[in-house]
Length: 487
Image (tube, rainbow, N blue to C red; front, side):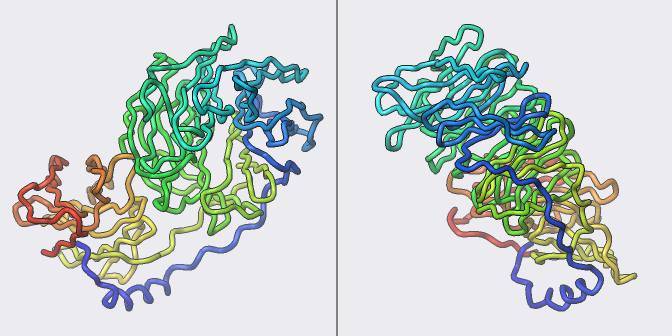
């Protein structure tokens, strides 16, 4: 249920702050790296150097052990995306500048700086190379720019022969292997999975590539602009910054919704050694680390510089020790071992509430992703339940065994009602594919027949016992208005 209950919640909210302290400020962290005009960056697989491509044609080399910049490689032109071979022997870097008929990807010897040009013939209105990623099977993929706004071929490089071809089987939104110009590519630490986010298009198409099978996964439309994404260390999860709706974790390659972190509004990355997800929060000016098994916050790092909403590039070192973040004034390097442990959760912005039928507890959903149980006998809050995202309405089954929550923020293609079994603490996402014109859940109520009705601009029926969900097409809802439900 999600009626307007703010007046009744006001007294309880002020009471809650008596018991819960607000979080403090973290000390500034991170080492500034004096590189201007940075475009992209990658650590070597030993975690010893950070390579940074720049718009003025250099590959800057930062030695992590000495804390010094080494002599840069002068590649020329204006560089974009960069990646490194798994044996650290060479770098691939996308060249934005073009010739009369050709564009170029540079293969740069990481010891000597010697350059081999891998040229492609530009198609109609195709411009310079934009992004590049190296898969574990010895193939690399390149996206390019479009002169204006349109689609360009997805290029493949055989790194053994330097032969470059077009992957016409890629499920890009342009058909015949074509993706939107300026599309981003992210890869897993083990190189088995690549994640493509097509740029400059409001439908937000995404798809993945498996280096194990040399095949592409299904494509999906997220209806969200964005290029900030990441793949976890073994390629089973993708993380994506969604426009104005936090960052979602979804499975790969099927894009099933897993969790949403509504505090994220900047770059994201996965740790290369542990099940940890990093997300930039520009309002707090921090990098937040989350456990991808429990979704609990692990620690925070103060950024120590300004980062604009949605901005920055965040990369993790393969040894699991460092993060590098592109900030407004340059690049900063962080040691994740210096993170400040997470503070206890704080009661936030209340959304909805429900008593259990025994009259022993009051459950309160908050915009910060938590549902707080309040014990009426002891007048104390219990440990909050971490639903993630930004929950709205909630209700409880007649036997007080299950809480149902309408999750206001979803994943790439799915939205969810969430179920918590109170006796065991088990959490279940009851998901549905979000229609193009549909929103995420707003409210939910459990009827006396054991079925629940959930609402957004459509009505869903949920069976809390079997987790089955379906649309109630017999509902007279108009399909446009947001719906509340009372019982």
